[in-house]
Length: 100
Image (cartoon, rainbow, N blue to C red; front, side, top):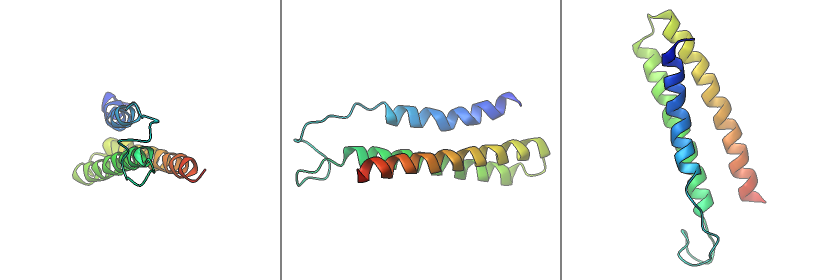
């Protein structure tokens, strides 16, 4: 695999790490959502899902632009598969922790 594969993969990992590293407070005041419910974890989780979806769309657009380059197309298809796998796992984690 080439260096561009890992650079594109880093563009998926960095936003998730940045959003996931936001320190979440456990205090009941100044919460997002009001009404005594703290929706901060839910919003951060949705931002992570949106970052993953935006990354998948970026890779699909990149695949359309460089569709004549077979190596880039194969790498992008692998990256799209990785992105959908991470999206599935992240949504399971988000909705499982939100429900319980």
